[in-house]
Length: 278
Image (spheres, rainbow, N blue to C red):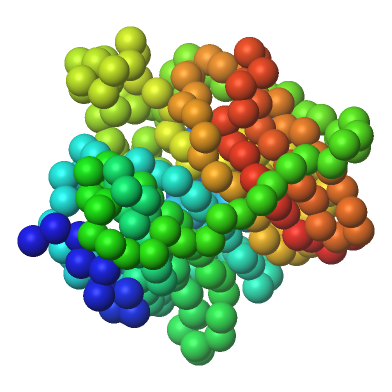
């Protein structure tokens, strides 16, 4: 059957996920952290306890997503649209959580369907640890006479950004990032990428999200994960490994609007919002 809009409210899980120091280190290197971010890339540096990048939540906090309950669709027609994380505190270096997923919304966009999934994770004692949300656009699955969903108005402030940070991605960035779990050949196999219309493999959207999160963490939180509360972004254009990413930030109190652009000025993450403690 095609996409089933009555699946809203269906749940999946709970799913147990464990991780250790090595997983957190590998993720940090995968999103470009290096020798100037030793709390996230080493576990044995003197007077530098290991910490975990907040965006590691996208790796460990997405369990239980009930895609099997929304009907049938061609996975090749699915595009990651949005990502949000909300953290109740720093992610531990070694951890275990249970995550329950839920179909939050299914919107009819005519040429496709947007499916929003929300996940909530708790520790062994049942204490909330993190929440994540992702939306996907599935081409060819719209037209079921459903609601289109809310229209969000977004504009960056009419002034220069308060902060800008530029990071260079490596030509082999996707080959490192994929080791954290996303083995989609679109990011590693030239022949598969060609089927999707790309002349070479593209970077994972969540890798771009991780690069952006590093910039927000360093600039807004002084590198302290305990101050990082939430992050939302909409993927608007693919990034190629080797691209330079510039994150522009407009700060208002404990909230920040941001955009991530490539070296050509194309917006690759739009409608970005982050909350933090100063």
